[in-house]
Length: 445
View 1 (tube, rainbow, N blue to C red):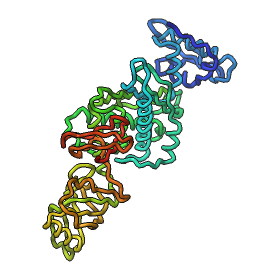
View 2 (view 1 turned 180 degrees about the vertical axis):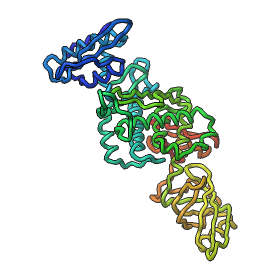
View 3 (view 1 turned 90 degrees about the vertical axis):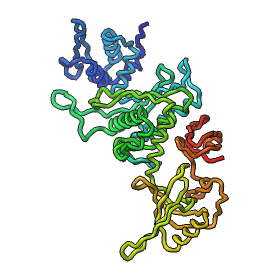
View 4 (view 1 turned 120 degrees about the vertical axis):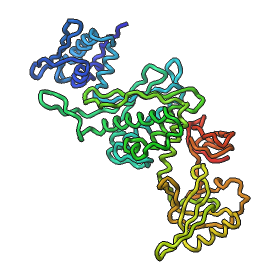
């Protein structure tokens, strides 16, 4: 069934430069022009030539009529309907990221809770890519630069498309520069920021997808520095994991990228990615790996002293201990250097098998945890404490939360966002995204 667009407002809304970008990408060639009136375009298909005249301005009184004629001719050269052509032309100046949620219903609808999650995490995904394009980091903070704020304020959402439920995210690219005879200039350091964002997104999604296809044990072997420079961050991984769903739901998230027709396409970048809910915990493991690299200021760590070491280094005496404690819900050894008084307290705690609490700045360096500027704030806790991780606090006094993908051990955990309880029956079980709200922060019940 043919759909003929007759609405003048729709026809007038099409930019003539978007029409030129679209037909050029479809193989049409400009063969002439009528000065200040039309550019003339030609294509040959199956030994038949087609010609269209594209107005140079949309202010002409008969502009809607001319666009209608162009759509009719284009329709005769393709299997697309006029409505499909209209959408493609309107988006020819934008990179479009389509996020398809398999949580959608068969009739193309979606529940409110699932739609809220889709919009929220899609927004975070784009924000992560924009922030990494501006300044790549393992963990992106809440503050945004002026460039990132401006970009995000111009990102728009299109109408839902056919599919389980498809959310189009439209990232418009500024008009390209042209060289001699209208030829596109090559990509250079002057790549527009919106294109840098979508290029970073494509590259980082490709890296995450590649990792999920490998054996779990291989994850720690990946070069985190290279991944960060490519745009991968803990924030992006967490959004992808939440979009792909909770393990056992048998759903997936599909992300497709369509490059603007008005700017040179990036070479060697994938355009489509599918993330299964079966891999969501694995993607959270990647996110947690990035968060490990971020220092935690003034953290309180309870634990037991399992190693004491003292040696002379020139005129100084080095006093080092290793504390067995819990970091992000997992058992870890934390190394620290103490002053003489604190070191003596550590010796007493070790001899009495006591639990001590040490405060300092936690950092992950040279493949192990270090506590910088440490001092013992309590060396009198007894070994009767059942779970020393329950007493691990931040400087603000709140408990450190366990995150999706971590393996905190058997027990019941409460989602801090909605209160949903999740039970782990084995020490090897990982915390999933909350089955109720997709939240990722838990505390022990």
